[in-house]
Length: 277
Image 1 (cartoon, rainbow, N blue to C red):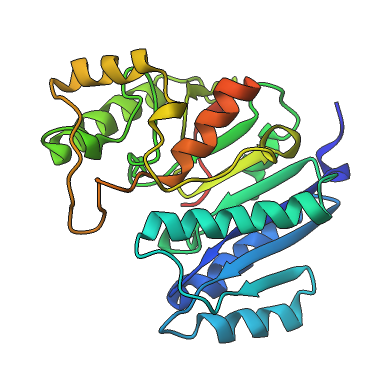
Image 2: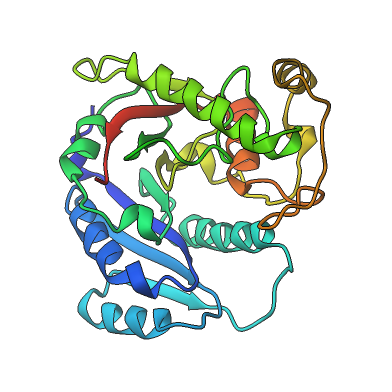
């Protein structure tokens, strides 16, 4: 196995109205970057109403590894479509400039990752071949149920009746699964899609995949949809909610991970350990 310190990593993500958390997240990134022989930070900044851009400019002066693209064009009216565009921009930069870096990290720049980071948690897993994409548990609970696809819950909870109840059911399901894992043996939970605010990837398996905030039924086996519908006791629902339009939107991570699983055979895994606490 290659020693982690000899490896390189790109750390990526979208930034929009993250000023309240951005400085701490960037500090955490520097600690994570110290695990690698070299790292690059690649960010996509979208038009914000706070001081996010100024913080990025100041951070870039201190850390030349940081680069960011400033978007000046209106994108889609749908949030997930915009986020997918931002993440795909970061992927394109990796593909063009850093395809030889064994790892890349995709993360959010909000309150989830502005907590105290424990890079030693991530370091334990870098030399393992039991994962191709690895995300982590969060405190006080696993929150990113929208981006999660785990059998038998393979699709978005927003696309079934009683979505709030469905969220609670799936959250309890994944929490129970994670608690049963043996942390001492570095046991991981298999799934089809998971993000939870932070995930590290083996570059070679994911550069030809793409994020998509649209509903991509073509990427999910029909049998998986039917199984989820059966356990949810609901047909598929396409409904507009207050924060997401379920007629046109799905979590952008699902399409990205489903491509890697069913086209590349990637191992998507969740660690029961908490990286940010």
